[in-house]
Length: 432
Image (cartoon, rainbow, N blue to C red; front, side):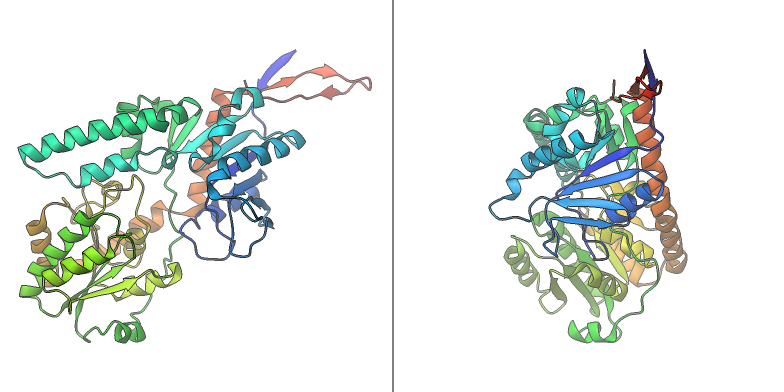
C-alpha cells in the first residue's frame, strides 16, 4: 500500500560553484545564514561546491556539511557539474535526498535523472541566462531606430539563450527561485514557465552591514579627496562600456557646476583601459578615483565616504549588493528604472530611478541633490528601513522553507506501508 506524505525533516542538497568559508566575506555570503537557518530548524543540509580559502575538501560548521570538490589536483572548474553529479550519487545512495536546490546550472546532470532518483529539483533563476536580456534593455535608447535595434537584439538573444541551454534547465525544474517579481513575470510571459512553480525569495546578495559606519579620514586621504568634497561612488565589473560612459558624461556636466565633486569607481575588468581613456577625454582625470578591485569587507568603508551612490547597470536579473549596502548605510542611491532594484526603490521616496541612457536627466538629478533641493535625510532613512525589513535572514529562511514544502506537496513523496517480520512498519521513500 502507498500513501503520499511530506517528510517532517527534509534532507536538502545545495549545489553552487561559489560557497563561502564560514566567517569570511564573500560575494555569496548570504548562503551560510540561509543554510544554517535551515539546519537549525532540524533539516539536514549538504552543500556541493568548488573551492574555499582554506583548501579543505570538507567542512562541517553550524550543522551544515559542505564538500568542496575542486580541492584536489587535476580537476578543472569546467568539470564541476560532473563532479557534483558523481558526489551526489554517492551521498544519495547512503541517505536519499528529498530536495536538490541548484543555485546555478551545475545541477543539470542530476536534474536529468530526478525521476529515477526520486528527488525534487529546484533552481535559482541565475541558472538561466535571463540577465543578458536585462542588459540589452538597460542600454536601449528612446528613439525609433533604438527601439527597433533593441527589439531585434532581444529576440536574437532570447532565442539563442533559450534554445542554447535555458529550455533544458527549465524542463528539468520542479520549481524556480527568483529574487524579484520582475524575474517572475519574465519567466511566465516569455519562458512560459508556470507561475505556480516560481517562488519569490529576496536573497542572493551579501549579508550587508546595517550598523552605520563613520567616514574614514584615512581613506579620504588615500584617495586624495578634499575635506569638503561631494563624493559619488559607483561599482562596475568593467565588462560593459556604455553604462560607465553614460555616468562619466553626466558627471562631466555636474563638475562644471560643482567643481568640488569627486567620483570613485570601485572595480576592475577587461575594459578598464578604455574607461580610463574616456575619463581623460572628458577631462575628468583629476576628478575621478579608480579604486580598483576592493576586498568585500572594505567596500562599506568606501560607500560610507559617499554622498550619492549610483549604479546604472541592468545586466543582472538580481539585486546589486553594493546598492543595497548603500541603502543600508542611509545613502542617497540612484539606480536604473529597468533593473530589479526598481522593485525596491520608490522614486523620490527611498531613492531615485533614471533611464541609463538619459545622461542629461542624470546630471540634472545629481546637481539638484548636491544643491540640497530635496530632503535627503528622510530619503536615506527610508532606504535603510526598506532593506533591513526586506532582507532579514530569518525571513529568507522561512520563505525558502515554505517554498520547499510547497514543492513537496505538489510532488509528494510516497511511503510504502509493509510489515517486517517483527511486525513493524517499513518506510521506503521516494518522490512521485
